[in-house]
Length: 103
Image (cartoon, rainbow, N blue to C red; front, side, top):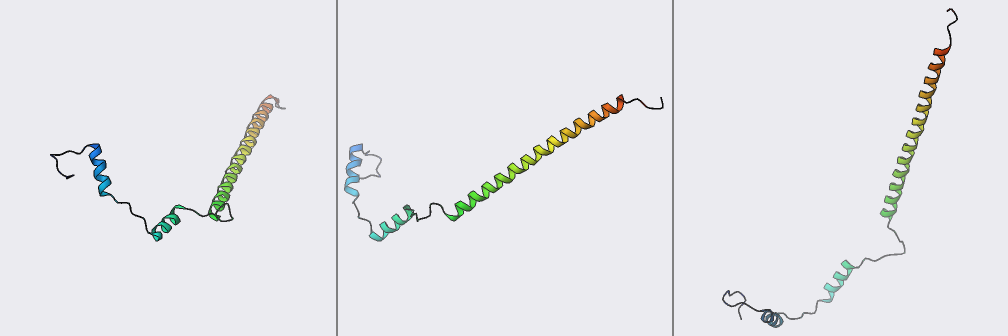
């Protein structure tokens, strides 16, 4: 049975038979299996997190805190500036109502 010939096409059953005859089960080397397991399995120690994860989480929390602090300061400045604008308008309105003494 030749696979490469175009004149004769294999049926599904013929292909299964050919693969069964051609392929032979091979037991892998113990060293290969050990290396493969070492790559696939990740060992965890007593620590639930690695140092880099803790450091990254701490840095992210610090950045979030600084961002919220900056936002809070901006709101405080906004409130003070609005109070200043309202006071200035009120004072200018009060000055316009006061009559001049010489008139």
